[in-house]
Length: 227
Image (cartoon, rainbow, N blue to C red):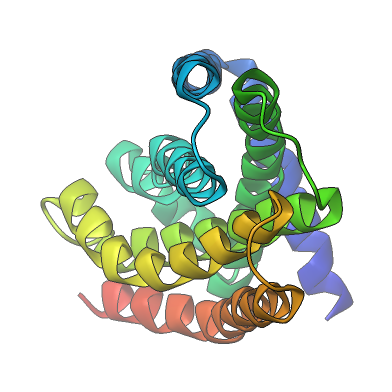
């Protein structure tokens, strides 16, 4: 177990070194997501949308941010032919955890940024800041686990980018509804009990992902090796 987590840390460090050695994709995604958040924030400031609408806008922004960044963490490895190299040095479970932790850290930082831009420019006060931050954190973990897992499933396909997106849609919709419920309460709408139910749903979703993700990645890698 200790050696496995050492390998996970090695893979996590490798992801950061690779990203910052050639940060073009990261900066492009950052600028694009910030521009979208700014545009929506300006529109919200002019129209002053309701709490429910603002919560939905925030969820949509977080999904857009995740989809524009996370799938390439696995699929790009397959396109470049480096995923087989990873399998030579790391177990499939270690690859999942290393990619998942890196994706969660990157997406959480981006999520905090675009949330700050949207909320700050919309003029809508935040009634429950703890729920807002908790919602961003849980949504980040959900997106990271879902898209990394879908990327693993799509690795062997010819249209792997399209397949990963199609697999992610039904998995992202339920937790997006729960995330909107958390954000609604953060903006002052809904009951606390309902918000806590949504928090529990998101937390349960994350637990399921981290429980089934590593063995599923091993199964998929085994199928690829057999071929």
